[in-house]
Image 1: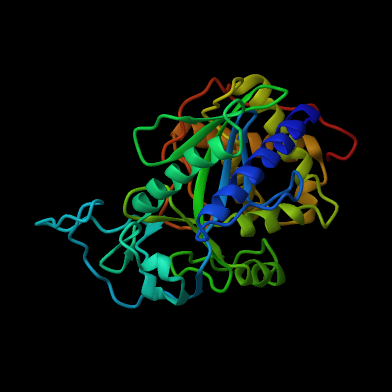
Image 2: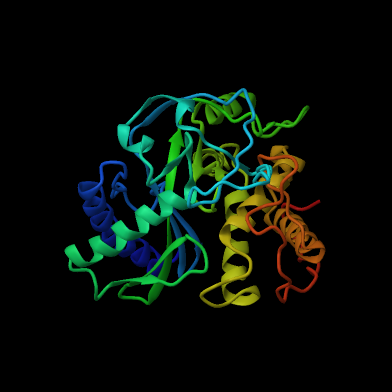
Amino acid sequence: MGPGLERSVEEVQKIIQQLTAEISYKAVRFQAISNSGIHNENIKVLGPSQFLITVPLRGLTGYRESQVRHWRYYTVNGAKLLSSVRDPEELHQWLEVEQFSKSLQQWHEEDVNIEGDLVPAKVLIVFRELVEKSIVSCNLSSKVTVLESFSSVVRVAVETSESQVEVELVPAVEIPTCWPEKARWPRCLKRWPSQEKVQCIKSLGFDLLARSNYHWQLSFSRAEHILMEGLDEDGGCRMKCFRVMRQMKEDVWCAGNKPVITAYHLQTVLFWTCEKYPRTKDWRCFPEAFLRLIQKLHKCVSQHFLKHYFLKKHQSAAKVLPQPQVNPPAPLPTCGCCP
């Protein structure tokens, strides 16, 4: 991450921290994001001018998996339907307020709840109104603008000293107490990551994001953070490969503010490659390791297909990777550490 991007992250974080503090003051259900530097787990940098920030929800604790499947028969506005809403896809799920042993009374109210279901679209409507009011009450109108959207997603434009940045603000239910049944991870007989790290990751749980109408999207940001944090404990060059690949993506393959391939896609490619090549010696020679990583990326782009790392049947963030101008990787020159 270059100094310009670091400054943008710090400025955006400061502004959004102020904004969410005001939102939290107006509505206790929403929690302000912390101001903990550029490695804040609530902030995901998708591109130089494209951020995703999760806003934790308060008053939902003691989560447990639902044992019974309920079919829903309503619109987002609460009107009854003759046929059921489709079942959630692999990356999404229903969420009932009864799945929490403790919940604030506000989560039982009709502005977010239909027949016991917490509905993402309704949460987003409430949240969007709070964002608009808080921009005014915080005197941030010159720096923050709410962008129009065809869905309930809340996107804002933030003016920084470097450039204008687009930020998606996503309400999130943090569930640090268990691992979702849908995430059958790690796969059998895999040597990366270590069993100790797997247990650590699973103990940190997962999140549910309000990014669609009916279904909450599973997110594994804490798990991903831990995987990235200890990537080269064995002295390998995985992180160097990732940084160079990200720089190539930003400077050559997908230059611009809204890249078709994001840093999240590259991170997923890195995880799959680390799993396929778990040995320390596979990551000692940078040219070989980097070429291996680029070949995996090129294959995913060519096939328009990238599997989600934690969910077996689901493809990653963008269901189909668009085709950027990425030429097949040429052989790299050997170095002193190559055989």
